[in-house]
Amino acid sequence: MSMSAINTRLTKVLLSLAVIMAPPVMAQQDLPIAAEQGEQDWGDDNWGDDSWGNDSTADDNARVWHGFIEGGLGNRVGYDPALNDRFSPMDDATLSDLRVRLETSGFVGNDRYALKADLYADGVEEGLRSDLREASYTLSPSERTDLKLGQQVLTWGTGDLLFLNDLFPKDWQSFFSGRDTEYLKAPVLAAKGSYYGDAASIDLVWMPDYTSDRYINGNRFSWFSTQAGQNVAAPEGRIDAEEPANSFANSEFSVRIAGSIESTEWALYGYHGFQKQPNGLDDAGNPIFSRLNVLGASVRGNVGSGLANAEVAWYMAEDSDGSDPYLPNSQFRFLLGYERELLPRLTLSLQYYLEQTLDYQALEAASTSVYNPEEYRYLYTTRLNYRMWQDNLVWSLFAFYSPSDEDHYLRPSVSYRYNDNLSVVLGANIFEGAKPNTFFGQFEDASNVYGRIRYAF
Image (cartoon, rainbow, N blue to C red; front, side):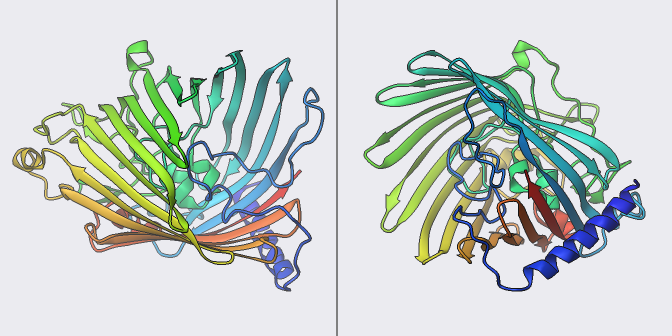
């Protein structure tokens, strides 16, 4: 079956489900639904992949397979001249997926194994893809220690869609195209050791093979090139950065020491590795991943009738004095957040984020580019969630706004669970900016609307 045929069939299914959703019938369901699965509870280690209505109560030693089938369509609301007609007749599509998920877990004695994999047809980049989300084995060498080995999704930190000390890989192509927010977190091959002490716990993660973000590379979305002074896309504008060679010296290490004092949680973080995106150039002008070390801390606790969090991170870049315009400068990053329930079933979350480029005067003196970043980049985020119909219908809006960059990014969505198996999500990714070179402004022509239908089994 051709990708255009798949696209046509998914469109018909989306329209049919829209008709089903029209009458205000409440499904008899007690389990809550997240507004776009995965966009809730963004604290440490809350990235559990959702599988609707599949909480198995079978015997631990029985192998139970479950998963879902999902169709997704997304289209630009405008025209991106940098992309031209490369994907004709789907040059305006940002999402055209037909996906199957299979997963299982169980125990071997006291040890736990988990397997989770996706197979999907991608109509935008025209191919059949696979994504091994998890293939892990967890054992407990002692009463206070755990060791998790294999492919896994890792996260920590306190930000909501903002990451300071979380240097695990992200998938920005999926996030901007309208896939489930679960896919913003990319899997990584790692060994994670945890020790649970009386006063604090320690997590140490070793990633033997460097794993970059699944960044915007010019295939699905165009990006702003400071050399060209405009947005570019594949094939000429495709980013083909060579990742650091696999060796122990190029391994990534992350550490977290965490504890609590009464109801207040605290954590210290460390990272040794590389930038997660190729934002540097070598002597030949090729994109590279420069080395990076990060130290940080966070705190989270109750303030008034809500939950507050703060997080800081010091990014120590390879160009420590800022004199090389082709390598990123060191940065100081700060986050402050607050969340509370305004009304029954109406939740508001606010965040303030600051990104200070250090040694900025040295950067200005060394660089001849007119597209240097601002010394202080700051932005605000707002999340509004409203639940109704026994939490089966959820309206959500997440907004990023940067006064320093004069750009913004809106993520409205509505999700509806018809029953234990069938669910639908409709949403949009809306970018706008006063300048073409800012983080959100460069994606203005990528603004899109999308829909997804999922059948869980």
